[in-house]
Length: 110
Image (cartoon, rainbow, N blue to C red):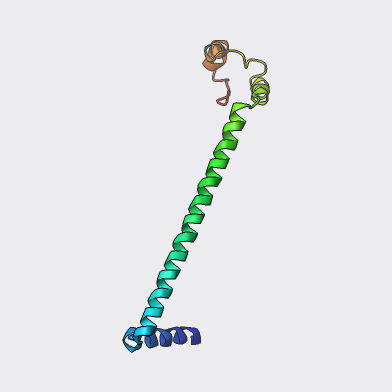
């Protein structure tokens, strides 16, 4: 409650402040605001540049991983999943599973 009252009092006290300020105070405040704005823009530009650099670095890393990746891991996983039938085409697998499909014995994950 005290904090709310303090904020309210500060807000009420700041009303009409520009009219009570001298011209020098107004100029000083204006300069301070423009300096703060320039500083904010610089920090925002730096954050954007660093984010773009990080994205480029990640993209280059992924590109390198894709270009010289070893697909043996995925080939082994496919062979284990299809129990040696990984080198068959989809048509061959459907043909070999026809009798199981007719009896609804096939696993939907096959």
